[in-house]
Image 1 (cartoon, rainbow, N blue to C red):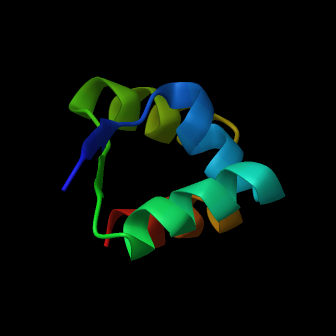
Image 2: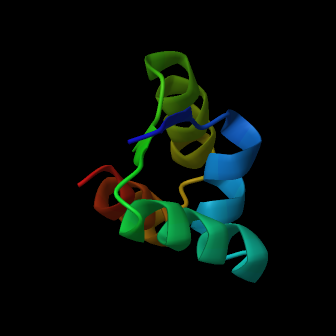
Length: 66
């Protein structure tokens, strides 16, 4: 099992639904690899979404974390 630490840009691409990034994320997850979101990245993304009141994207982030 390989562990990946996702950066803010990658998490943002996943939330926006970038097809290429989502496909890679899904492939790595399906292969049993672990994709981690560091606490600093979580803070940056969540703060940005709260600041812009992006309710739909906040729901996507919460789903991603599960």
